[in-house]
Each structure stands twice: as structure tokens, then as C-alpha cells.
Length: 354
Image (cartoon, rainbow, N blue to C red):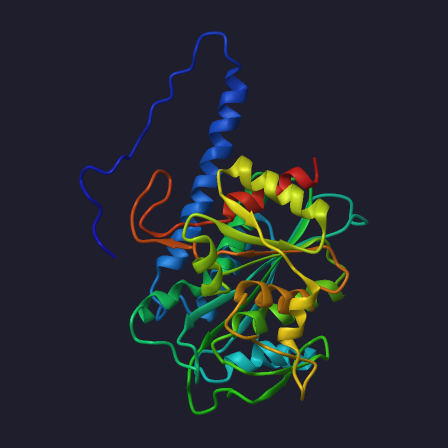
């Protein structure tokens, strides 16, 4: 919303060494430009204030981008979600006057008999914490809690623009988390799309509830592998700082390919464990699972919760709570939203099919 500085770079000239393959250079420049524009798309979406980047607006943008770049997009409203049984996502949404949406972006460019990969992005367009309200300090930054959804939308655009020979769907559960008169409460029991019941311990552990329904939806649709991206836990930021995203997976092959993709994209990730004995911390005496464990190992117990809804499907979870935004410029990282994960998601999809 600020006018650009007069000194902003508006053009660049590339000098090519004699004898180089000009077609390869042109292709590299085009690919780099598309990925840069996709990264900036995600940045711009996250930097928008929450009063303009609502769930409805995210759905509208997905439709506009889908039409522009040849993707089929379907935006579910609350009634359709209710008919499917997405009780976890709808539970989070009920405190806001902004209606939730569930965005599905489909890109199909290879044999229809081949598996469809799923990219799932958490999109809490403003996270107050709900009834378990957050402190006022830093609350304005909670518009960033849809960075995972923005990354998935932007990655889908890059995949479509560069015409990768792949079948992939982007799934974005989008809602606000506010303490309105109809808000869900600590102590409530929600029934998820999977049929699993969830005891709500903290309404500020809402992202994993939205992901639960989205990931189970992908599983039921037969999509594989399923990769989710989310600003999920402050615990991950405490553990890894602002330079690394935490990566969790139930499949070693998917994990290695994702790590290789992140390395190629220049984005740092750190493999985090999923120990079975930590599942004990998510057990509830009155429901199938509770939505948060104790204060220790919070990034792990959150990932374990999300993984419950993937079942045996190859699944990977990327926690970008520490990397989605930056307080200062550093190299390729800009101040504000970083657009993290866009290039890694693209590279993961590209190398999965080549």
C-alpha cells in the first residue's frame, strides 16, 4: 500500500558468453522468472491485511488464477463442507462472520491412470487464537497464518505455467479463527471428516483441525503423496529459529525427495522425528484424540496429530511457522512475507515426475 521507491529495479540485462546454448539460457530465464513471480504472488497474498485477504477472497483468487492458467477450481462453501462431514474445519470457522471455504485446484497434464499428488496449505486468514485468545503483542502478524495456503496456490500456478507433465491438486482449507458468540470452546468435541472425534483443549491449536479434514479428504480421493504446508507451531520456531522449516514424514522416499528439492530450491529444511511414544500426549479420555499435547515437543505432537489423518498414505508435513515471514532483509529473504515453500513445492513435483 506504499508507493514504490524511485530506485527500484525495473529491468535487468543478461550478458551471455559466446558459444553458450541460447535456448537453454532462455528456458532458464523463463523458468526463473515464473518461479520468482510465483514466490512474489505468495508474498503479496500473505502481506495483504486480513480485512481484504478473507477466505472468500482467497477462493476468488484461486478461481481467477485457475481460469488464467488452465486449472479447474472448485470452491466449497460451508453447506457443502457440512454435507461432506468436515466438522473439524467448520468448528474452527464458527466464531467468524467471514464464511469459510475449501478450495480445490486441479491440474491434470499426464495419464489419468497415474496417481494425483496433493499439496495441502493451511489458510487461517486471521488467527486470534479464538476463545484461547493470543496476547495482543504480535497479534497483527496473525494475518500470516494463511502462508501455507498462499504457497500452495502460488506453487500450483508455477506448475501450470511451466506445464509439468503431472497430475496434482492443491487443497486449501481457509477460515478465520475468532472468538465470536458462536465460537468453538475448549472442552468441545468435534467430529472430523474421518469420523474421528477430537477433544478441543485449545482453540489456538486450530490449524491442525483444518488440516485434518483437508488431508483426510485427499486420502479419500486416493491422492498420493500428500504434502501439507502450514504455519503450525510456535514450538517449531523455538526449536529451529527463523532459518529452517521443520519437515516430518511417514515415508523415507518422499522425505528424501523433498529434502533434495528444498536443497535445489535454496530453502533450508530440517528433518524432525515422529516417535510413536509421543502419541501418548495426544490421547484423550473422552474422544479419539485431543488437539494439543503438553508444552513439551509441541511441533512433534502437532505433526503426529496431523499424521493421524493421513493414515498409511505417503505424507509429508512442513512447518513454516519460523520461516513464513522475516523482520529484516537477508540475501534472497525479504522483509515481511517470504513466500517460503513455493519453489520447494514446485521442485518436489517436478522431480517426482521426471
